[in-house]
Length: 244
Image (cartoon, rainbow, N blue to C red):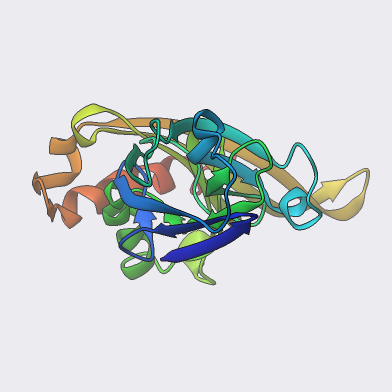
C-alpha cells in the first residue's frame, strides 16, 4: 500500500508491503520526505503514527477522530524513515465503527492518513470453520469489543437448533494460542403469558477457556473432532434445556 500527502513545501511518501494484516502481526514500512522549498522540516513533529480511527469522525474530519497508539519521528536531517509497529494481539480490527490507520507527515495536522485492513487473529479460524462447516452457522457480523472480537452467527433452520436465533462469541487470544471465549445464546420460544400466546425470549451465557492442545493437534493442525465436541456439549447444555 502507498500513500502521498503534500504539506507545502514538503512531500511525504508512505509505503508498506501488503494489503491486509491480522491481529498480532508486525507492520513494516518506510516514509520518505522531499523538500520542494527552502523551509526547514520540523523533524520532532514529523513522522508516522499508528492510530485508532473512528470511521464517522474520520469522514467528517473531526479533531478527535484519531487516538494515537504509537509514534515514530524523523531524526535530525533525516529524509527516510523505516518503521515497524506490532499490532496488538487483542487489538482493534477493521469494522463498521473503527479501524487502525497510519498517520504520516506533519503529525500535528493529521492530514495524511492511510486506513489499514486488519483481520481477526488466525487463531480463531478453526473454531469458526467448524461452526460453519459442521453446524451450518453463518457469520453475520464481526466487530471489535474492548479487548476481544465479537462474532455474531445466525443459527441454521434445523430441528436440533429450534429456538436458537443467534449465537454471539466474544473471543480473546491468550498466550501460546490459548483462547478464552464467552458464548451468548439468544433463545426464543412460543409460550402462554396471561392466557395469551406470546414469543418468549431469553439469553444464556457460557464461558469457555481452551488451551491450544484442546483444539489443535499441532500448531497449525486443527482437531476438528475435539472442536465439534466443545460446541456440541454447549448446544446440548443450552438448547435442549431451553431454560424457559
